[in-house]
Length: 277
Image (cartoon, rainbow, N blue to C red; front, side, top):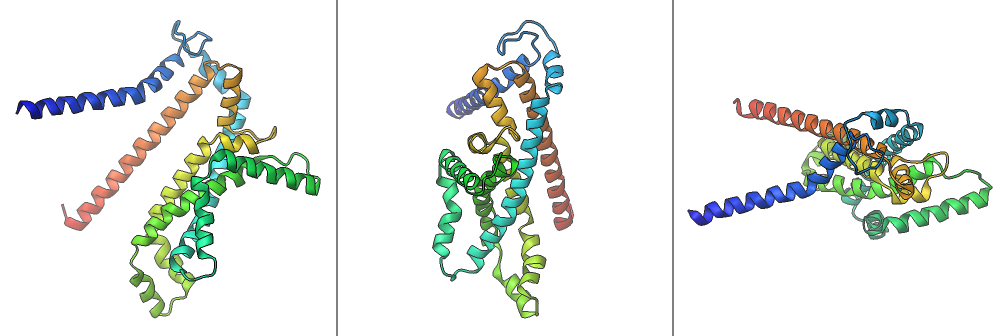
């Protein structure tokens, strides 16, 4: 009895220490965002001046808008291309070059972001010199870079769900006269809907958080929020970044809690409909 009680207390202490290690920096960042001091880690007295400065900072607002647009575009494109890639790999297993295609799809997963960003930068510069383009590094070059990486992640997520689907559903639809596109649209697509949503959220988050690839592909006309923060860090941060981080933490926390609540309600409703209690 004593050994089991000691083990429980030991596990609780380790759990608390792990949570403290993870969340103490976030809590301290939130606290310092309300400090009046212009030093990022110095507390003087409570103030909201850095939140007012944040909402009056046009560069932060512009870079945030660019990040949201790029993330939404790259997530949508990654899911579309990733769905086609996953379906092709798992449903058409004997086409010429399948192994090469599979390797090309998975390559960005193991390729360092620096290599991906540098190679895309060289491609953009080459195209710029070849076609005499000016200001070619913009929101679309960032989108291409993020979509390249995001497609690999989306393909893996969607393939995992496609492997679980019983092929008999699709074969039965084909036997009943449905065409391949109708089978995909009416049978396969609804069954992989959750994986599509998961892939979209994953690639959206990866794009929103990226610094390395965006640093190579961004230009004066388009700078993402992580790149803007990183450039400010090189010159010395001010507590405006603390305020921005606090706003992001609050928004993400509310979104996660709301999503968890909706998922729990849905599972409870399905349980009641299935078992009647």
